[in-house]
Amino acid sequence: MPRHRGFLASFHYVTLVGGHVLAQALFLMLLLGTSYEAIGEWGWRLAFLLGGVGALVVLWMRRTMDESMSPEALQSVKKGATTGSGSMAELFSSYWKELLACFLVTMGGTVAFYAYSINGPNIVKATFSDSSPITGSVISLTALIVLMVLQPARGYISDRVGRRSLLVFFGVGGVLFTWILFFVLPGVTNGFLSFAILTLGFIILTGYTSINAVVKAVMFPTHIRALGVGVGYAIANSCFGGTAPLFYAAARSSGHVLLFVIYVTTLIGASLLVYLFLLRNHGANWLDAPEEMRRRRDSKEHRTFPMGV
Image (cartoon, rainbow, N blue to C red; front, side):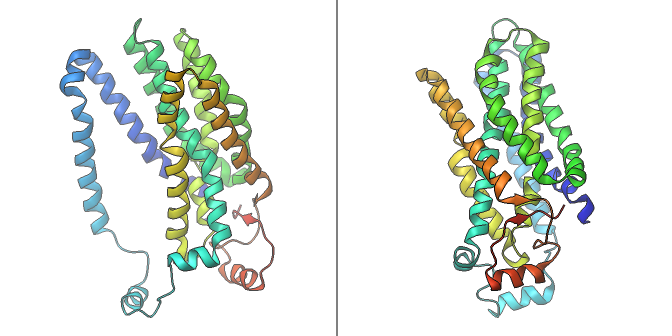
C-alpha cells in the first residue's frame, strides 16, 4: 500500500512512545497511591516486573509469526544457495552509501528523540518536584500521550506532502527549539506554559519519528534491508541516542548544559543537511522499482535517495 506507507510505518514509534507513556502512568499511579519512600524502597521494581512480562509476551509473539520470505527462499538459504545474500560483507562493499545515509538520517533524529522524550519530561517533573510533583507527572504523561497519538497523524500527512518535507520541518525546528527546551523550560513554573513548551518540542520531533522507518526501508533491496536498516539504526542509536540522557545529566551536574545543547543542535543540523541535499520525495526506490534500482547500481549512476512519495 504505497499511498499509506507513511501512515502504516508511523506505528513503529507509537509502540516506542507507548513504553514511555506506560512508565509515566505507572509513576503517577505510585505517586497517587503511595509515598516517595515506598517508591524508593520497592515501587521502582514494578516497572522492571512489567517489562519482564512484556518481553516474554513479545518473545511468544515473535516465535509464532510467519516469516515474510517464501518457503522456497528459506530453503535456499538453509542449503547455502544464497551465501552472499544479506551478509555484512555485501552490506559494507555494495551498499555502504545506503548504510551511511541510514546512519546520518538517524543521527539527529535519535539524539532528539532521547533528549526530548526523556530529558523533557524529567525537566518538568524536577521543576514541580517540590511544589506539586503530581502536577509535573500529569504534564509529562499528557504530553507523551500527545506525542504517541500524533505519530499516525504525521505519517498520514507525509503520504500527502512527502516525507522529506517532514524531515526538513523536524531539522529546522530542532535546530531552533533545542535551546528553549533546555534553557527556558526548566524555569517555567506555570503548568499550562510548561505543557505547551514540552508539547511543541514533541510536535517538532514527530517530523522524524513518524516516518523514519519507511525513509530508511526504501534505501535497501529486500534481501539486505533488515540488516542495512538494523546496522545503521543501531550504530547511530548507540553513539548518539542512548547516550543523550547520560550526557545531559553529566552536563547539568558540571554546569555545562550549553555544551550539551550545542552537541544536540549540531547533530540535528548535520542530519538536516542530509535531508536537504541527499534525500528527495519522488523517484525510483527499492520498494517500488527494484529493477530500476539494480540497473542504476550496476551502472554506478550518481543518485540521491528517493523515498517513494
